[in-house]
Image (cartoon, rainbow, N blue to C red; front, top):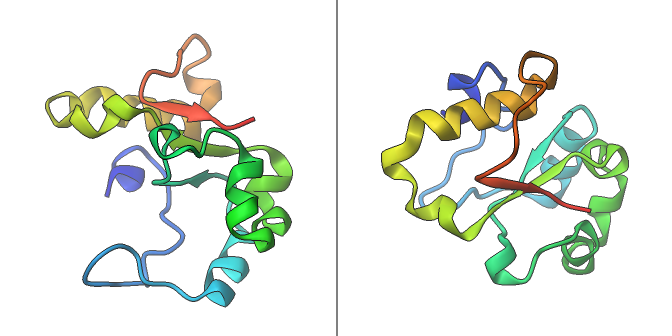
Amino acid sequence: ELIEASGGKYALDDVFGADCLEITLEKFYATGQSTDILFTYRSVRQGFDTRQKLVNENPMMTRIKPFVDGKVYSPYPHYYESADKLDEVIVEIAAILHPELYPEHRLKYFKKLP
């Protein structure tokens, strides 16, 4: 919902689950080939502060478009306590999705993973 509220298209809107996203690796890989940006819920707090650390968990990720293009974002720890700042989060996601519209935006809730 946040992606769509920010002017984007959520690529996995046809995947549903009772808990976290339940998706096969095959579906993730196939969808990742045509996705421009990956937002991961794996955070810096959990030790995922680089793309390489995500790849260590799933080597297949190195071949999806956002990894190749360097467009992988992870939430900062305080993101999870920002429910009262939803407007700021939506603007930040919009700035990531449409950087040409927000040239001066500095990331506050998400980190672009090196």
